[in-house]
Image (cartoon, rainbow, N blue to C red):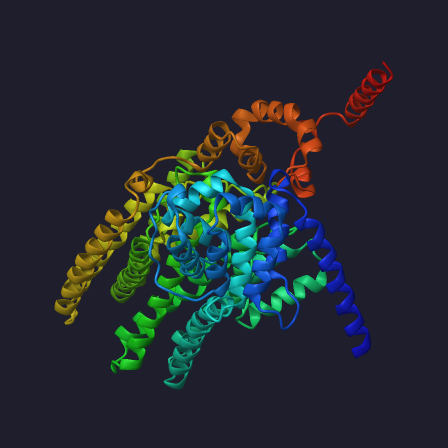
Length: 601
């Protein structure tokens, strides 16, 4: 077995050397996105015991394309050397123009990519942040688009190899997920040990509900991938490892597989949203109700509440931040995605304020619900029912009840109702910024919903005072403090984000209008084709326009074979939109015949 492994490794090494040799022969005029990606892999691949920087410089000087580029930009080796070192440092933006970049600037620009990669979950998003902070690199990548695909590959390799990279990101996700689960189990055990069976049962029930809903997502996502895949993904759920596994897949840049519903980023968002809806939010409510009802005010119980709220706040901030800074989303819907600033310090401010906005909202709303329960269960059931009914009426008025995913029949209706309930509860208790998206809650209702949550706390305290509870003086002070902090946090947040995105917090745009706008305003086929990821009901009004667009471009796509034109994309396009196969063959035959006649002439 060892001999076979040695022979196999040697054969693969020789094959890689051959591939690298042919790649290095390509000149600058032959470089495209695919060749840039291959050259990036060549830079990151090396034999054992070979210095990583020496290998990168060997490839750099051995590549015909890079030698031509270095005649124009002789600082390239210094830039790539600093990048390959992968040393974490403080980001210091370089505002020099491309024509003025010198050796010192090149070194700093190379170092700047490391904190950008660290601060983002994907290499693509890290490079987008880096090029915005270093305008000369934005110029360079616009001039030579293939360099971006090269840097994405190199960036992923640097992150994987660095101590602060992939392990750090996945560890944070795992620690937070397991911390929240451990806190819930501890609180449940405390309830049972004190014979508070109802609270203990509800706590365990929230964990069970969270896992059940995650298993439902696993089924929808992997039902076409076979029983073995379903079993593996289900194990990640029941073991509490689903969140870190999802974070790992996003961090390594895993692509969307065929026969699955979501890409890794969207799958992670749905998994984390379920944890918020079924575990973090009800868990926090139960703990606050238990704390208020307990004659003993244990410090550990109070600490557990704040840990749960802070963990939920971090999760919400991470979802919003990752979704907004994802390059593909900024390209597809630039009017919505892009509020996070390009400057590193401002990005940190936005992320931190989102953590505490969600954390504070969870504490505010949970306390309001707990106080209403103390007044009478009728009050909380009535309030939550009327609030939910109002949301569905609003969505019905917009013609936006159906969720955008292209599911069939009753599964679409069932999934839409479940998603609308989940997103409403999550925004009620966390004010997660991403869910102001037209496909989710929508901007105006999102803002009104936050006001609703704040007012609910004051009403709940007032009702408790009327009932004669003696702790209302403290509760009034807490409510005023909470309101003050909420206003401060939102003021900081809105003053820090890009001002052109403030209108998204007051928008009445629906999901179907947003998707139609995306199709009709974009000139990029890769963006327009995503209309087929939406339910047909969302774009009925432009069906003929979409059909004409496909018919006019189908032959060109088949000839050019763009990267996005995969088998999955082809299968998503309705057959009535595709040119007749017989006519396609006839057209090909006539073209070849004409070429043959011309050759003879």
